[in-house]
Image (tube, rainbow, N blue to C red; front, top):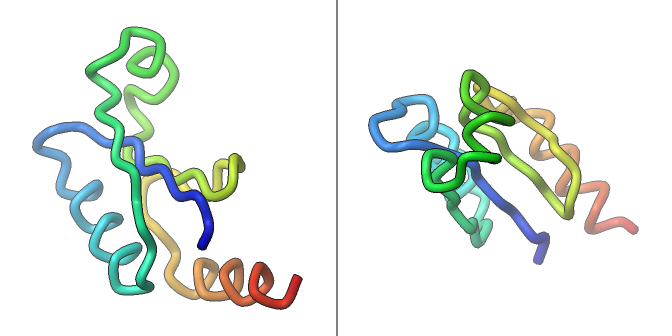
Length: 78
């Protein structure tokens, strides 16, 4: 199972959408509110949601479901 982190904030509808896409693919997602940490807020303030998979930033804003499927398939093949 990949390590998936979703950087989000309260009231972010795109963040809710990203979480739903990740959940549809059966991923166990760790959610971090960027507003809980000044460094994260400075880094991701205008970019949420941000999805990091296995330590690599993969998506900002919307999650491209086709690309997500490809990433997960590549990971399974490796």
